[in-house]
Amino acid sequence: MSNWYLQNGKDSDVVISSRVRLARNLIEYNFPNKSLKDESKNVLDKIEEITPSLRYGLKFLKLENIDDITKISLMEKHLISPDFAMNSKPNKAILINDDENICIMVNEEDHLRLQVFSAGLELENLVGLITEIDDKLSELVNYAYSEKYGYLTACPTNVGTAMRVSIMVHLPALTLTGNISKVLRAVNNFGMNIRGIYGEGTESKGDVYQIFNSQSLGLSEKEIMKNVKTITDKIIEQERLARKYLTKKPLELEDRVYRSYGILANARRLTSDECRQLLSDIKLGTDLGIITELDDSKVKKLELYTKPGNLQKYDGSQLNAFDRDIKRCEVIKKILDIQEQEEKLSQSKIG
Image 1 (spheres, one colour):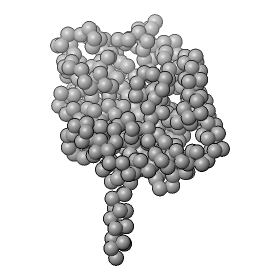
Image 2 (image 1 turned 60 degrees about the vertical axis):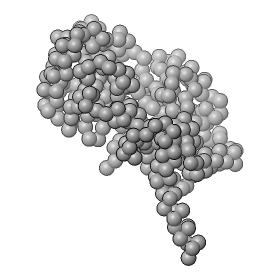
Image 3 (image 1 turned 90 degrees about the vertical axis):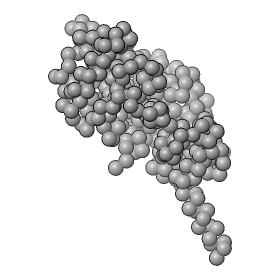
Image 4 (image 1 turned 180 degrees about the horizontal axis):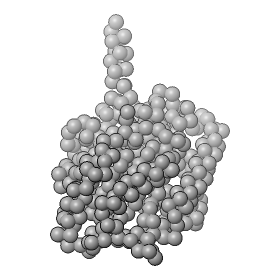
């Protein structure tokens, strides 16, 4: 069985993935941004000691023992944050399982950042899973907790349940119809945040956005989950309406997605940004049944293995930016089986 980020889930035509995160700190030590080196080392040692007791197949990996390409690949899967991966602070680690649907960052902004992931819109099971893990951890360490404010965190906006629910969505039709800005404003007015995952601007290359709650104080876990799901359901509805509108001009839509497919399949060099936008069109075309040459599995592989870190992991080599742009096209052809098709066509012509 493939990892969650290569699978489809509920409402996967619009929803790429769901994540639930909890921020937790150990009461005996200062927050990581205030702690001394010895304190962060004590936290690290404590978590390493208790990892076997947590089960779930979790492995304790010190970040200093993970190579840079693997760190980048973990960032691209959204399993670890860029700052956590790239800053030079010592005594950092992750607890991760083979399926990679559980990843706990140690000594990030907080002592512990518990995270669980799933393809598609899947919140109830994720909240249930992370609650189980949190309960086990609470038996093994002493959390910093206030009866008045809830769980204490390094950033005041996370105080309370310290839960962040994030949904990643693909919104190409709302972008093409010019309605994306209105949707972004509406979401922000409802006490939620939405942003492009490839930058903080309203426009997102690749038409991928992240919806998440901006508040956890004064709200229960169920209320946070319900609020995020309600907003996400509305966005799914609006994106599907926009897609229906686009299909009223089928020739324009088919021309767009097949032009993108043609470039992707035949280009000899593609940058990461170019590839991302082409794949947005291709995913839209596949989801609408326009592009029949692809299935969801291949689209998922294309989205993952054309990113710089995972491209290099896939190829098993370290490449500079120029070479990555060339290798990206080779990997695309391999995933699409184009090379095999070209060889068969060549053999049939010879025969």
